[in-house]
Every structure is written in structure tokens, then in C-alpha cells.
Length: 78
Image 1 (tube, rainbow, N blue to C red):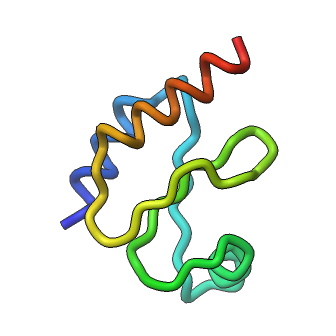
Image 2: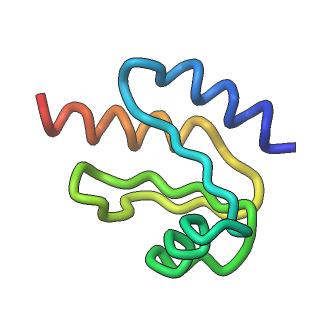
């Protein structure tokens, strides 16, 4: 259900922000989930340039808040 939404975000944000998908069944995915305190899947986390989470969405991804948060982060670095 989230895949088409995340695919759309990836397309919309191309060249602006990097979208990384992690599988919690891999060691890297488990490390990231532990580091960011992921309690369920799917979870979408927007992180700033220092790796600090600025937005966390669990379950259904809402693209509007994600895009808004990324635009705010981009405005801070320009």
C-alpha cells in the first residue's frame, strides 16, 4: 500500500533529497531500526544532514508532511 506513495516521493524528490529503503531483515536494516527506535513497519524517517530524525511516520505514509519537512530542511542549508 505504501510502495506507490514512496515511489512517488522518490520521483518528486529526485535531485533534492536521497530516499533510502532499508529491509529490517538485513543487518544494516536492523542497525538502522535500532538506532532510530523503529517499533513497527513500515516506518518512514526524515533525517537532517547530521542524521538526526526530524519526522517519523509509522504505518500509512502521508507525502504532504514528508515533502514539507524536506523543503524546510533544504531551505536551512541554502
